Image (cartoon, rainbow over all chains, first blue to last red; front, side):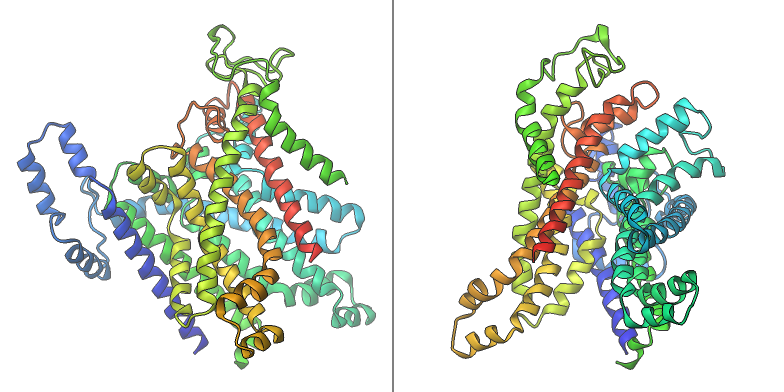
Length: 304
Length: 254
């Protein structure tokens, strides 16, 4: 029941996101076809013809209903610029986005948990240092860290490429930089949870029983804090899957984020619409997965 | 104490720093283009031979004012929406709307604003603030609902106080401290996101003395002149660090 309600709310959010984007995009004057064909000197008649062929002259409500009917069949329309199916265009960029999201998230989760535990449980020096690192991860803009790492590793040391070359070497800098900044949010939540749980009675009992400290941290403190930590990881995963336009631009990587930027600037609305649908979908699926995980981890959720 | 000194120092540099710069941020000197930091130009020069430190000191006011305007806009609207939500039954519907709002990329909002009102600071402000409204509204709603459950609010309600009086005299004073702490975080997020949009070339013109634009120039010249990005990046980092710390302190006072 609880799960079904969550699912309904996420589907609602997805439908709304697509609808709002649909309205916003129609509010913009002009589209890629008109802009492009006018430059190439096409007559008003042939522009109108092309628009009719793509169904752009229909009333907005009609277009809107058609969009959903086609989307339900897995057809998101064609690009206004080169006529390719939107699903193909997005699929071509998806590999790169998924790879970066996965490696950045793995880095962020590992680093974030470590930093959070160090800040919450470490001695004076360890916890102070960890807190400073967390503060930096949250406050330093990624376009700054990115530029500096590019200068050091790609321009000075020349050990890693500045532009994605399709191998693992091109992935190192972007996932390290993106992972570091994503780790900030994860570490902050971990730190707060760990600090709160550390003084709980059952933790004192576990220590009193003579359990090893590593066992106390892993099986007692972190287990109780896991739902909160997982929810922030899920939130970050949702953001990463939707494409990270700044990171992709910084490191000249292909990906959904840069596709969105170029499609939006080129007024290629079917592509923009498709990406919004994808990111809302990815966000919802990740949320659902983590909801399910929480449900398994936390027995208290199952009683209500 | 240390924190206050740093905070006041930062504000002084932002407000009065531009008066102390020996160079005009717009004067180009092509003969000294892309110079590494020297005593004459402590932060180096950019591709047109302009002094980077002077540009960064002038640009700070620009970046921070836009971000402050965006934060105020987001807080104002978010507060109104949040308070309205706290007292209605259509709560779940608005919650879904907010969740949907969170998934719409601010690039699209920025583009819409730029197309409709032109590439001005206001387009950037609107795009940045739109992304922050939903979280503010959500927090206000949660806080207001919590405060409304208190016995003295129930008592005032039973005594026949009007909703507006309940809101302004009993609920708002209780939630303002937490909101103030969150306002600092929102301000910081607006600084980061505004500079990010300018970095991408959306909102605010590239080439102007502004931190986001300078970071963009720094990225373009990362092989030859990474110092262009150095000072603006530190400016943003310090602002966000100070705001986050201020937020933590405000939370602790409560």
